[in-house]
Image (cartoon, rainbow, N blue to C red; front, side):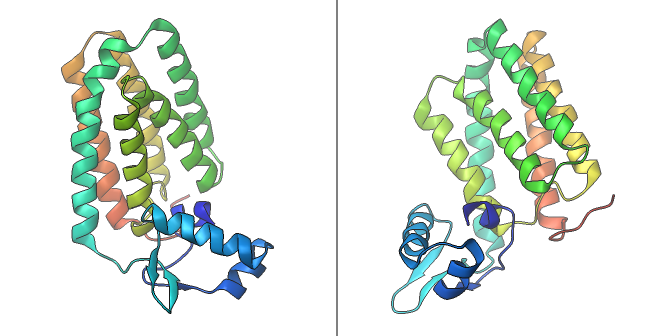
Length: 204
């Protein structure tokens, strides 16, 4: 259910019915209720007393605020990653960047998103502040259910893959301003793509 929410399988404001979810995921009502409560606790769903759970209605202003906070946090964490990343760390990040690059060549959107999340989680984990890196991860997931998917087109997938490698090149070349510039470009483009790409659209 969480994966479907993150991939935009449900609509803004859509009510989630227990019996439909039981059939969809082949689980018990208890398990459905537990999952709904967990998702509501992290802000992915809205619980309305005596009515149930739904996706929050579309709110572009809220999404914009979340993206602004995410950009501030990621750009603030980047110098910490830059100074702390070891040769072994960079080798691991290169492996994850290659995994994403391979995924964009023909994998499903959920596999592409998983590969992207793996790269970014590992990248920001190097900042040395688990609260900061955890908050960045939460914001990424909090915005995603309410936005169009940024990897719906092959162009965006390819650009994201290239930017991941650019980020690592900047660290290896001791170019902090370059790293920050690539990250600003990456975040801005993903933000625009999230607003413009339609659900399920693909140019391939």
